[in-house]
Every structure is written in structure tokens, then in C-alpha cells.
Length: 305
Image (tube, rainbow, N blue to C red; front, side, top):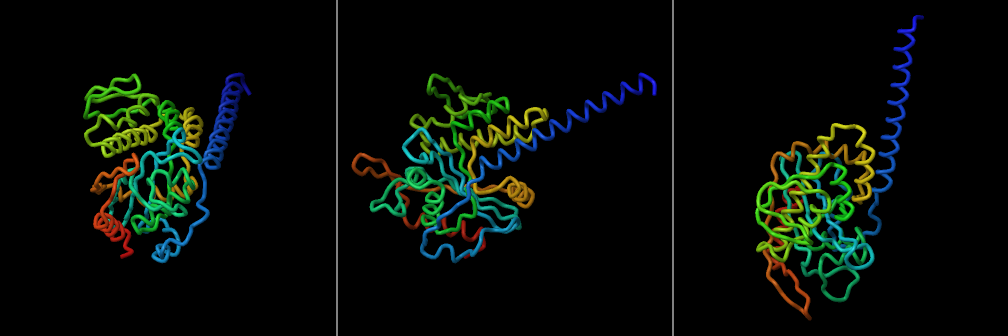
């Protein structure tokens, strides 16, 4: 065996060891991410017969309801308040998604509380279990799975991805940052400030929700374009610190495959509400007919009417 052949074999051997070592680091990162993110739902108190509409959570491919929440763990006590709440129903056969943003200050009756309260307090009082149950009772639909995003933790995700790009419709300043109109490149810290502006926005919570959606859509697109494999372990680590869900990574992959066709059509449902102040607290009050309208449209999309 000549020296050239030995050199080639040595290079291949070193390359194989590096590949195996790197592959193992990704494997470890996947296991760690799954352990960190996965938090099953536990208690489901009797919710007025809602669970009778579906005996078990949807199988991949069946109509599915997801609760997506942005969690602010720096506000309030306990688990942290939900800074944003969205319900997405997905129908693969109809190839469509319906998305409704529920105002965080919606006046609701939270299970176990004697008085009406703000919807965003449900997560603070009882974590994802109580948050899911409260939304189920409000809209009279079954929630199959939840995804909670810690907005502070999401800063690291965005920085790991190298930032996000958004189109800003309104010039404003907040937390020492200036956001002019037009296309903006944001790092994690700027992105967090960008999505939290509400008071200067004529659209209020609706405007903030739109910015949150834009940032998350950009982050997802950036994540799918990661070309440097060396970033995968760091990306999974930051992702696992920012997201809590009852789905495992395996289930997520199955769902992505099963529901990909539904992404062809996304319809956003607007929610009408009136303002009400009680003892100095501001509430968004959803008229009963509005709750029924939204609930009926979502149930039809889930084929459970």
C-alpha cells in the first residue's frame, strides 16, 4: 500500500469519525429538544360535553385544532400570561387552514374562578391545561394540541437563525428601537420589541398579532433554509428553550407531512368585540352571537357539526 493510498484511507477514516461524531451530536440535540419541549396535557375537567364531540385527539390527516400561544413569563406569576392566543383549524382534505386570533383581554369565566377574568390569565393560573380548557369552553370546540412559545426564549431562536426579515406597515419607536416603514432586518432583541408594540397601533391587539405572525413566519422560513449543518444543534437547543407543546418531535414530523396540502389556503377570521372597563380593568367583550359565529365556522371546518 503506497503512501498516497494510506493518505486517502486516513482522510476517509477521519472524515467518517467526524461525521459519526457530528451525527451523534445532532441525535443528542434532537433527544434533548424533545425532552425540553414535550409537556403533555394532564387534567381535563368536565367541560360541558365538549369532549363528547371527539373521543380522542385527531389522527394525522384528520381535521385538527391547534391552540398557539405566545407566553410572557416575565408578566404575572405562576406559568406566565399568554401574550397572544390563536386557534388554527386544519383540514387536509379541504386543503385549508382557518386561523382566529382571540384578544388576550377577552372577558371569560375561567374554571375554578368565581368571577369573570381575562383570558390571558388562564395560563398564569393553571398552565396549558387550564388555557386549553378555557378556550374549548369559550368557542365550544375540541383542542387537539397546543404550542406555547416563550417570546423571550424566541429571541435566541431568531439570533441563532441570523435574524428575520419583515415588512413594517407603520413607523414607530419602542424600547429604544426605531422601526421605519418598509422591509426591516431584525435580530432577536429588536424582533421582540417589534412584536410587543400595541399602544401606538390603531389596530391595537390585532396589529400586534399581525406583527407576531410576520416574525414567526419569517423565522420558520429561515429555519427551513438552514444550510449549515453545524447550526442544527444550536438551533434545536434554542428552539427547545422557547417552545412547550404536548406534541413530540416525531408527531410534529407526521403532522407536517399529513397537513402540508392545507397550507395552500389560509383564511383569517376577524373577531368583533366591544370594550368594557370594570374596576379599572380593560376587557374585550365578545358578544354571544359573535362567539357562536366563530365557533360554528370552526366546528364546520373540523367536520364535527
